[in-house]
Amino acid sequence: MPILPTISTLFIFISAVLVVIGWILVSKKKYHAHKRTMIAAAISALLFFIIYISRTIFVGNTSFGGPDDLKIYYTTFLLFHITLATISAFFGIITLRLALKRNITKHRKLGPITSVIWLIACITGIMVYFLLYIFFDGGETTSMIRAILGY
Image 1 (cartoon, one colour):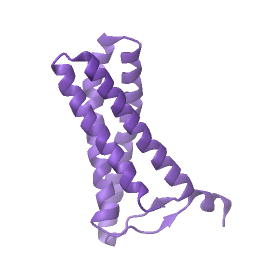
Image 2 (cartoon, rainbow, N blue to C red):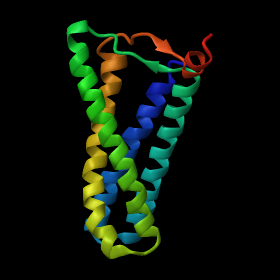
Image 3 (tube, rainbow, N blue to C red):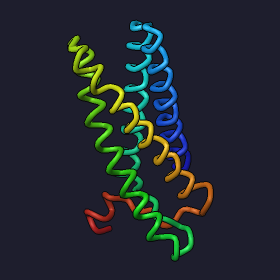
């Protein structure tokens, strides 16, 4: 299903836009709109994650199809992105939980940090998408299930 990477990347882009809008809303003291927007951002990120994990399990991951001399740079960039995405997801869950539990003092401290890390992770994720599917032809895709079961 070659459209899945595009759909999942669209969801992460929407999530990033919503985080920016949420940040603007909270700066204008529109707290109810901020809450709704940030929940929508979290749902968009969750939809991305569900599509990404489903595709990874059932279809597999696409390897870098660009020139071999760029592969080390791509791999380094990908590891940077994965690290940021993992940290931002962890921080995002904590930040959202703090807000929903009305621990606003801690939420206000952690929220800006989470938002910046999240935005960088989103931007690098979109760049990974462009490197895999737009700038270069994607490499081989192997299903995790096939790899595990050996067929």
